Length: 355
Image (cartoon, rainbow, N blue to C red; front, side):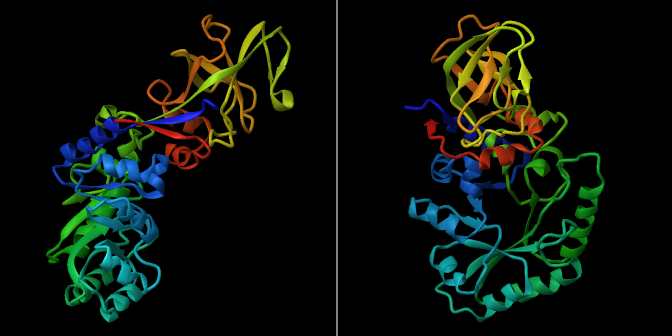
């Protein structure tokens, strides 16, 4: 069996969820959209069986969890796309974001088996989805008057909370507070960077996403983020060893030339598994628990590492591509992307779960 695998530490997942609650003293929706950022939404939701609720992107993701026996509240962050979905939202007791006037009309006109909870989204400055500040009170009044609505939560999304020196988050807070003045509803404003770095933001409900999986959303160190524990270890083994003299090329395009006699380990991991092809030689990797580097281009199914100084490295030696020793954030920066994308891009690699 090919040794490439993603090992998911569910105890670390629970730790990170509880950290979000401890930092905020709020209820927390664990964000498990995109198959829990590549970690497996069903197993992650089952592990978080005491969570206050979950958030997914759309209806189909929620139905997967309901079919697996998840009974906690589930919020559809993108809301519904056509009015016919409202019947299923009511049937499966889901919560939905409401971000557009046509959705208000659809809710008012629907014949539902039960009233639904709505999270009224405001565009406080990200300019993606949501009601404009001047439209927000009127939208709330429409939902509040509807017999099809059981409860309303006021929500907005932060666009630059991961950049703590930027003024945008404070500007969004001012805009959001002004628009919701006098509206008697719970509030949800804090995503992962909001939880970790912005204690002044109001939130009866918080929405931990990337922090749930043990990754910091910040470029620079932030003290609360130091308590996060990586949930995923992308691992494999050495499947081949080569002894090369100085001046020999390694990999496609001969982009790496050995500077001296070099012992090369070939690892069963490539860009078809989701490991980024963009990384250059020198990107860190751990072999037998010791840090070394990738050399040459990442291939579809394999990559090469320098094991010259790791005498015990041989066929079958363990390799960590990212995890506790090699952070996913470091690999993401080497690939000019973010850890979110690394996790979501994983494919073909079986997941194994540690309780």
